[in-house]
Image 1 (tube, rainbow, N blue to C red):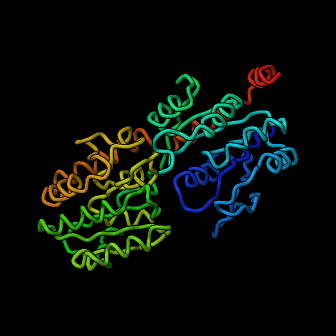
Image 2: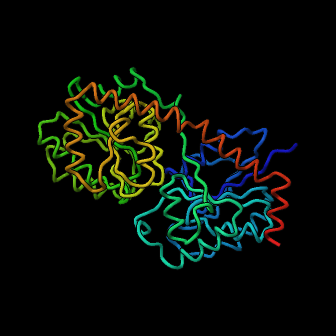
Image 3: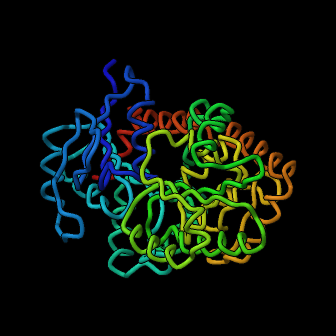
Length: 380
């Protein structure tokens, strides 16, 4: 029996949570059962899988993509087209026009422009596309509830498949911790506070800078590490320059390959985002056993059990983050307990094996002959 041909459609394969999920699928699904390919709208530097098709669109340039996508799907003849987020939603209509057997669409998060009500044009196109897709799912229950409410579709129209993390790659590593902390100049009494994400307004690093500065003024021996890059870097560096004491204790590490080593050097991981789908870096930090502080937005409360496997705060509340940092800096045993419980939670509920099993089950179920007949009947 030949493998199921799955074509993933994503805006780009640059650094990001959605892109990380796609990479994990490309490397993790059984190649004897699934033949995977990738279609991106925008090219990105770095490694691209050999079967990647890129539309070579310019970021921010408006375009009607249905004709081009339809030709690609008709030529490549995948069994399943799986599109993600608003940027690739035209893939649903294009796949139907190309008579692709199964069409899946998933939502992985929101940006600052769509944290509230969706623009009416998006609501209309999403409603049509969701109705045409054979399966629609979100990565968190919060995101499912949001789109159900916004688009006016019943909750049963959506499923939830949470993200997952490789708990063997992301695990406590005392050697990596010691080496990385030595490179940071962090002594035994230093509290290393870190975050990992793209430098984007929705991630709200400014609030983290404010909280770290307040913690320093409270007497915490603190080092701040910001891993990641993006459009906000210049603005954040400018803001940091006005905080002289903090600037001497802060490192912008940029994009790094050995993320697990950096996470191991942290005592506290802070995710100050204004919006999230399900944060992969939060899952990774917790898998490493770092005590997390995360804003109570998106899927974060579905991952972090407040007071047991981490702490939840209101978005934009630098004072609340600061108060937790001060407490954690002086309560070593409590901080270690939070980190240990965080790892147990990820191993039990958010492992990459669990995620891959759910994707495999979904793809195989949709490709069963009886379901394919139902799809054809529905389209007719």
